[in-house]
Structure formats: structure tokens, C-alpha cells
Image (cartoon, rainbow, N blue to C red; front, side, top):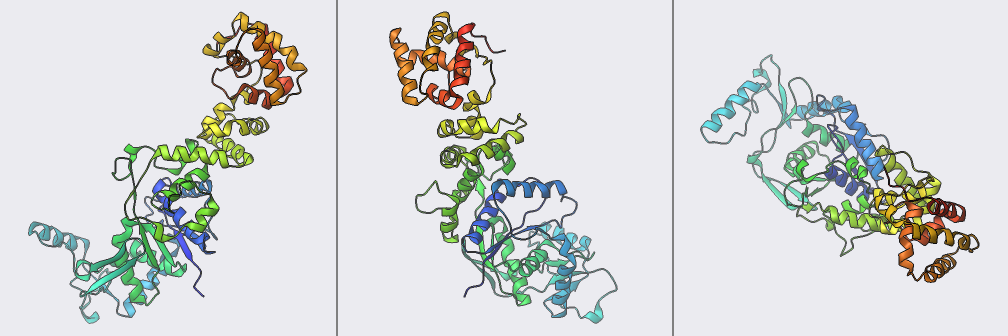
Length: 470
């Protein structure tokens, strides 16, 4: 029986949850969840100067909003520094590492001279083969005793076979002279200790894989499956940056994309399952596999995201849409819409909406209170003749059975009596019921508002000239 799958997401808490990081987390989450495995979260906070509690919380909030749950408590890389140092000492004891007394000034002087002479700046420590008896009483770093001959090969599930000549790699520092572990060591130790079986991360880390593999091999630890995924590029094919617009997950939440739509879009961004574009979470968990990840960078396309967002709003349960809309309103600093009124309107507005702000805008007719204030264009539809027809229509509606067919019949007969098509009466009805000319169907609005509210709004509009919105 195969070992259970364990994946991890290991962001640095130096800012918001980047959209590329969110996709990496999503790929790890899907791979683990689809195989009954575990998805772990580790905060790589060894850079204490740049790591902040606010950024850590932003990562938690972003993952939670996106719907990615992790197993157990999130761990801190910095909290395991003693364990990292312990491994470095173990490697020193078994001969896979050595003490290097070269100072930073000496290393920089070597590199400056190498640059001036147009030769490799790869630093090869002169202390690699010096016996302990010859060591000075001075601060030292612990370096990996990396192989100098041959190649280090990574069999990557996305990138294929990746070969690095060992003479192109230096003896990297494992433990600095102040006793603190380096990122390269900490990542390997943490992944090993956490039982991570699959390292799925951006291909900007591919250059690190050979170095990290050397640590695994020196310690005699089983290597994880490596899978380095291409980065996300902007629509112009260049690396995603601020010039392309929104970079953080919270910005997409603030734009009103429902979380299921963003999950679907990010899953499809660089991974494919045939020609499927729209799919559910259950389908994504079932279908997702490393073999479906392409090697070429994916391009961010907000039009595709908007299209998927509309499909998801149509497919989502109405209660989930209401919850998402309330969350959006709170994020946007809007007054909270009445949940019951919104729930009544959702079925008639969701199919024509692509984002949550569009949905709230279309549902506005159900959320506003009387008296309804008509905007400038709608007020023009409430001329004296139209108000007279609305006054005439009201008693007919009082006795209607309040079904769509009956309402259409009543309004149609009144319009016909005045030699009007149904469309001609629609404009003043929209103005009376919503204060606008662009609204859902007047009959949908009547059914959502109910008899009493509909009649009250029509009576208000018939009684007085349409007031222009301030």
C-alpha cells in the first residue's frame, strides 16, 4: 500500500497572499484532498526583519476565503531553528558538512576579483579539506560537503529530467556563523520532519531543487516527488507584476468574484482536463493530477475569470450566493443588505450577473425602501400619461392571482386598451418598481416584491411626478 500523500504550502509572511501563491496552495490542496491525503501549512518566517503578524494573518484570511482548509495547526519555520541546527551538526559529524572560517569580506573580495578577471564567481571554500587540528579559534559557518564530480539529477513530474553539473554548485551554507540556519536547510528539514511526500511549488524554486536534493541524499532521507509548476504571466506574456493589476487574493474578493469561481479559474490556469473549462470542486479533486500541468507559463485573463464567475453564480445554491454577497458587502464597506430580501431576489438576478457587485446592483429593487426615487432617465418614463395608466393598472392587479401568467395577462390587457405594446408599459413599470430603466423583468420584480409592496410602489409613482435622483 502506498504511503499517504502529504503536501504543503509554505509562504513567506512578507505581504498579501499573491495570486500565484494561491494557485500553488490550491494545486497542493487538490492533490492531497483528491487522494485522501493531508495538506499542511507552514509559514516560512525565518526572515524576521520582513516577516509580520499582519502578513501571516493575511495568508490565513486569503486561504480561508478561497476555501482551502489545512490539516492541523499552521507551523512556523522559525520555531524549528534548533532542529535545523541539530541536523547541520549531524551532517558535520558524519562528514557531509564542514566548518568554513572564511569571512564575508574574504568571500566578497574573491568574487570581486573573479568578476574583474571574468571567471566564475562560484566560491569554493579553502576550508573544505582542512583538518580540525588546523582550525582557528574563530567564528565559522557550516557548509555542505557537496559532490564536486558528476551530476545531480531531479526527476520532476512537470519539468521532466533536470540535470545539474555538480561543478556548477558550491558548498552551500547550512548554518551561519551566528548559529542561524539558512532557508535551504530549513526547508528540507521541515519537509522531512512533516512527512511531505510531494513538493509542488513554483518553478522559480527549480534552481533550489538540486541543492536541496543533495541534503536529502547526504542525510539518507527519502526524497519527495518534485513538481515545479510554471509561474503565472500577465496578458502580455510577461511575469505578473503590479502593472497587470490585482496581485493579491483579497483584491479578487474585493472585485466580487465568488470563491468557487476563483478556485475553478486558478485550477484551470496551467492545468487542463481535456477541454473542460467549468467544473465543480468535486470534479477538480477527482480529476487533478500532476500530469495535467503544462510546462508553459499560464496567462492571466480576467475576461475568462468573469465568464467563469457568471457560470458559477448561476450554478451556486442561492443560500451560498447570499452568504458570498454579504461577505462582499462587508469587505467593500457597504451597508449590509437585508438577507431575506436578497434571498428572494437571487433566483431572478443570478443568471444575468457575472460578479457579486453586479448581482447586488440587479437585486437593488428588492433591497431599497419606499418611496422609490427614480433616477433621471427613469423619471422621464413617469410622464402624466404613464402615471395615469399605472393608476388604472393598480386595481386590476389587486385582484390578480399573483402568478406570472396572470400578471402578464393583466398588464397586457391594460396596455392593449391604450393601444400600447407590453414593452411601452414596461418602462414606467420599471421606473415605479426600481427607480431605473435597466432592471430584471417587471414580472420577476413583482413576484419578488409581492402584492402589497408592488401595489404600494405603483400607487406612489402614480400619485406624484417622478422625482429625479439627487
